Length: 466
Image 1 (cartoon, rainbow, N blue to C red):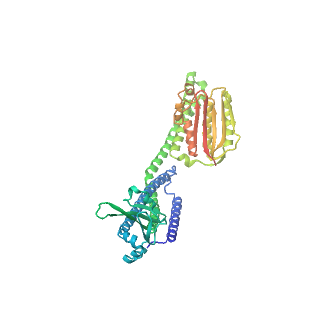
Image 2 (cartoon, helix red, strand yellow):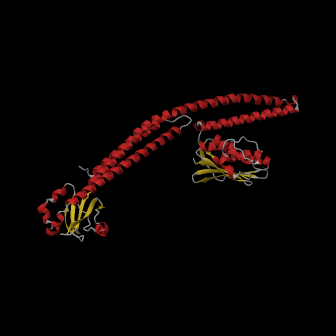
Image 3 (cartoon, rainbow, N blue to C red):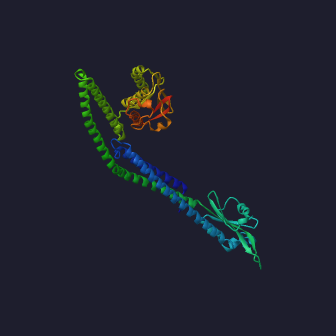
């Protein structure tokens, strides 16, 4: 027996509320347990879990939709077959109905008992498409068969129609004329049946598929947590070993470099005891040691960024980006003056972001230092900031050598150096821009660059607002 529609809606609403409450509890438990987060890579486990669940949800949704459509098609075919069988069963009665009218139905067959249980209906039409009589509780509102009459070329093909919740089929009835092989059109018969029963079945199926899909997704979520955690164990162990290796390498390399640097500095402090050629060699040793120390620090910084240690150790707090840039401009102004470059800070808008002040200081120091380094005397460097569509945008623009268009995609790669002879004369390791991009990305931002040879470059840092 079909459930009333109000009861179905109530059942659906109650079941859905239960499922959503269960899902909220599961989500809260997952967040509270934090079982799949890895120190150093806190987002990797969640990304894997979300990707896995999205794939499973897509598979489940596709399967459920396919099953629903397949079941709906079978129900429609079943209904069409029943209607066509009913219409064909009524063919022998068409001639009697045309002659005797409705009385022939009550005399020959109790039609009302046949239709009362299934909410079906039959209609008899003459050859002109006019209604002769009808029987049953369900018939379409239209009393004509205009659609069938307009299809004169296909009158031998049944026509199925859907009007609101009533499905109907119309067939043409032919009879052979006496002593002739010619078919004569006797009229039409239309059988109808309500689709409420089938709609109820589909509604139940839809509800069950939803509940089954959500429950399956919840169960899969539980197993996914465990599977994701197990899948990340090798990665976690590798990261731990890598962090240990970087720490040991840092210690092992810093100590000899520090001894070389200290020894060379002590010897240089007594330069009068050495010949001029030896002093130059000591200076080269001291400079090389300092360069090696700087290279080591920057490489370790990038490694720590790649394995997620930097993001874990960053201390994010609201800070005034305007004040930070103003202080950097004052710090680099003497360097710019010595080189004969005008350094201007056009910071009229107070910009506040949330981030690590030391890392952001390093980011903008690299950009401003590069701008001064690659700008010839007489040029200028401009630092400006503004709000741009929900982002804090800081621009460092110079009138320096510029970058060739084909080289722009590589400027943030490690150890990249411009092939321009003037640019290559400047000292550098080719890691400054890579470090700046890494810091920007750790803050959820990015760096873009526009440049033209002989005109200058403009680096724009985009950071999310506080």
